[in-house]
Length: 480
Image (cartoon, rainbow, N blue to C red):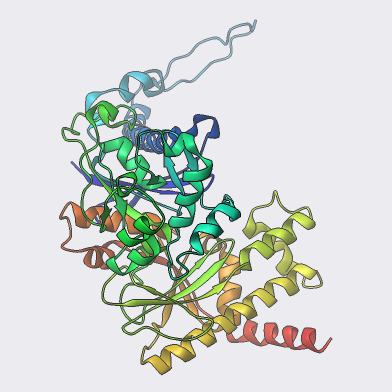
């Protein structure tokens, strides 16, 4: 009997999910788009559907492996085939059909096949924030809030730094169906946890983040009832077990060894859970989280106070996370693809085309972006040295850009930095696995779980010859 955790990260229009073993093996992955017509149920529906689909895929894989073994055995027997006539044909055309194929359905549903499924011991969910939801509606992180109402109220307390309070004020004034529905107002991942367990909570990544959430005085200042909000909780504590009546939704009921419902955890915001999922929770560890935008992060023992570098608490106390942000490194590439009618082409294939056509403006664009990334590292590392922090020799890379092998190699060549990509490039899923596995005591702490299960199998080393070629191109481009 094997054990695993189901992990999901809720984005704006879709979620990423994986089933990960207790040793960090990625058993299955999935992406599910949300159906907006389902309203506030769209996240739970996608979550349950994803788990169900992946378990069925694992079941089919187990059945296929079993049938392949039987096919090998049957192929050696003299009675392993039968001859027949294809319907509708006058002449006899022999059809050679292995007996195991004839019995495929029967073999697929043999009880022992179901026991090959992993027992899901825990579920952990993270997501982008601060998107808010309850059964009355939702208010996503990228939706504009009423500037008049919010500005007028915030003016009375200019020192507040909450990213939630302005949105709560908007909901209070502009979304009565959500404010008055009788439920608390949750972040989206916590709302799905509530639907799964009945437990109300808000996940605080680490106690030092409370200023960005809310304090009791903030709620008093703006007339926001405390009972409207779930209590704050630190990651690693179970929200309870999945309701038994939901087992079939998640595909758990088909495994006869799944006798207990999994514990449910909330990993918190995608940013902090990705830091855990790349192991960027010890001083000197560096990660490059790159998708539409890009953040270069380094964990430090002491905070910086430098303009152009964002200082936030690390999810691992007492450390800090320092980051340089590149707001559009991926977005500019996506824009170029659309303008040049390459938007349907996968990023790596598009990059391959550009590298074969250095005369194209796409070539110059990629090198300019890579040069900006290099400057970002140079700036961050120079300040890390002043802080007494030595960056790790390799940078953990995660996000959509990490899946583009040609771009990762170009970035390594231009920056002179070595990159490594985890077995699961969506580090939020690995971070969720660390939270869940530590929560069910498979590991003694989140930090120890990260050191044990995060595996790197793809590495990009800078090449000096290509570096000279790229630098010469950039030098000429600047001259022109």
